[in-house]
Figure 1: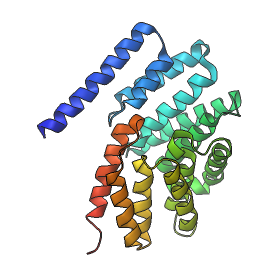
Figure 2: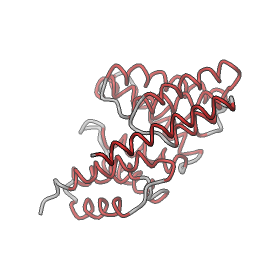
Figure 3: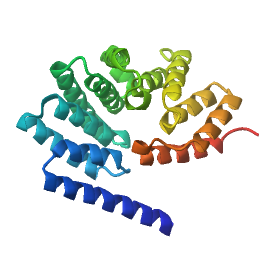
Figure 4: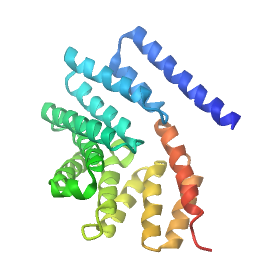
Amino acid sequence: MRRTISLLLCTTLVLVAIWAAVAQSQDPLAAIDAAYAKRNGTGQFAKQSLALAEQAFANGGGFEAAWRAARACFWICDRSENKKVDLEYGKKGWDWGLKAIELNPNRVEGHYYACIASGEYGKGMGIAKALFKGMGPKYEKHGNDAIAIDPTYERGGPLRAMGRYWQVLPPLARKLDKAEDFLKKAEKVAPCMTRTRFYLVELYMTTDQWDKARATAQAAQNTAGCPEHTWECAYFKKRIQKLSAQFPE
């Protein structure tokens, strides 16, 4: 327990040092990227990142500020189970993603963050209601556009986003074969991205493919996490451990 507390304290101090150093250099985009790479489970630095990105955009930061604002909004939503937070920041992130697309449609970032932020907005709304309101085709378009530009971005992010989409739809709309195909492609791009394997383990448990679930869980535990996603990968390794406890003998 003490070790965990010490680790969290050290991570927080590192983030504080990053913000202090970048405040001195007056480079808000560098601060946002540094904080994202060192992120942990708290929302404080995500909201600071969003504020910096919005300020940078107001000061002429254009596309580079817009997509970072979208990413910060997703970061705020990603660990949230509060529907109001997901609605507010998911919609805000989607809007920032659309702004980034408008400014530079040939870059992947706007499409990708518009996709996953719109997913958080739909999560806050409720998946069934979001589909009724036509959010599904919007999510698919952003995800497919991101894949067309760069499927490897953010460690296979566009592929992972589309895989997760087909995985969590209501049963009548769900397509687990498509979900697995996208997720396996994302896994091939970046085996270090533990989130992808967590989604796969969940999928294999749903379909009673226990040998695949065990193999994927073991691979996740044996593979070092991506260096710029250290906290996230550690988080999903713990979640995979909990899932593994549910595997039948």
